[in-house]
Length: 352
Image 1 (spheres, rainbow, N blue to C red):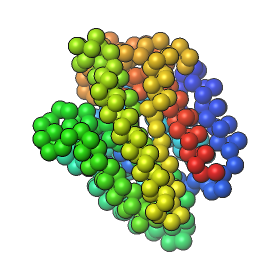
Image 2 (image 1 turned 180 degrees about the vertical axis):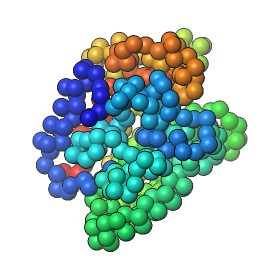
Image 3 (image 1 turned 45 degrees about the vertical axis):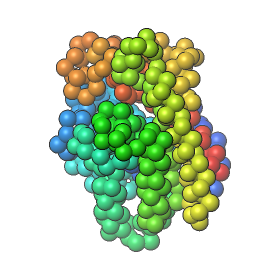
Image 4 (image 1 turned 90 degrees about the vertical axis):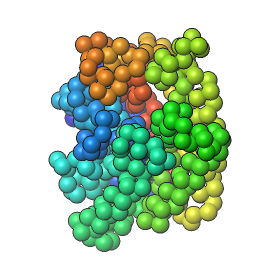
């Protein structure tokens, strides 16, 4: 049983009750995850990159208080969604040698912290590009068919819920920090460039048997502590330009959801938008039991993530449940749970 503070126990119960009260026409056989650090459960541990979190204080509220490679003090949305469907309480990383195909049969994560839709984004931090995540998935399919048999494996793959969560790095770690894409595209052109990659990826998943796909949107990325710390001219408030870009891109993803559901027979794509709930949490934190929104719990809370959290760990807060963000880029376990609850409601409504 995963360890977590008492403040989130009622939320866990609410999440499970939400699922139990829903009358679904189809079950979910497994959770299959693609994306970036918002859903990476430890794949970056196995590759050569500076973007890792397999050390303290990461994972201090995880089972056994151990760091796993999740960019949080505890569990992340993929874990909570898996648990709510009566599957594993945590989704194993595909590259983790501690797990095998029997563990992956009901859930597996291919995500890599630092990646994006754009291949050049993954090159910035030497992480796994999205196309490589798909290659790992194809390998997984072959292993699953040997393990379960052709019929059972195909049934599992078609009834699985596929989670996609990426895009933030494409803007914050690529477009706005390097000159390459900005010299090629306006911000709107870049959005459409990413949108085409997203569409192609969903179509490839569909051709490989996926039928239930959650297409994740962007958070209010201008309100991440790192971006607020950098927004000196704006009084360290949220970066409005970045938030507007996120909202614009999410609107395009919503339109893509509608398009894909019309074009691909028997598919069920749902756009899962974390922007509204996270923005509400940041604007009215006391409603959710939070006290701090502008600073992160880890280290000084302004700019640290990854190894910087480890270096300045003596400054880390004692109670992460009071903070919306764990490090300067990623939410705390409590925030992840609240976001999961709201995203799951959207998924359940779509799948009724």
